[in-house]
View 1 (spheres, rainbow, N blue to C red):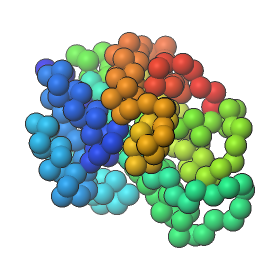
View 2 (cartoon, one colour; view 1 turned 90 degrees about the vertical axis):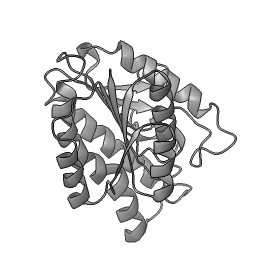
View 3 (cartoon, rainbow, N blue to C red; view 1 turned 60 degrees about the vertical axis):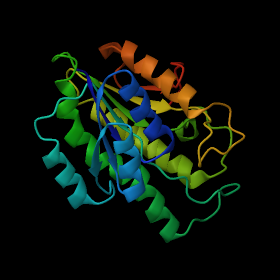
Length: 226
């Protein structure tokens, strides 16, 4: 039975990953920090793990709980948008710490722990380790500076994924733009549903090869410039 790990799965895109993989018969382990998130994961028949992904001790504890596991797919989904600013303007230290801890420190703590477990996925051929980034973190494609703290944090998360990909020997590491999705963050006017976004990313991951390692992709597979 193929196995997936979803980090940041209490709602939205993360919970939709759990739903779709479970519907296809996968074993799914999913991480959330709230009682509501744990309940939502368990309601879908997945194995729920509780952890605050910005807490070094809890991330280390998660690694201990997962010791011996092998993942065909592992997705780091946790993220926050922070202040929705217009233009490049000073940010407070409180906002900076809150956004960078979730969007950057979390992946930098988790990816090194997860990579060895993904290296042995797909029957030893190497699974897929993905970070949900954002097109807003692309420097090459940047045409707006709205919500610039979020943009900076996602550019850093992209760098973390790219750096982790250099250690991969069998796994394929990918950064994803999930699209403009109808979630709490994206809003009701967004272009696509969580179902469409996740289905697209799953197709890309299912067809990924080592040639794609270290890439930045749209949910439909299109290449996004760093």
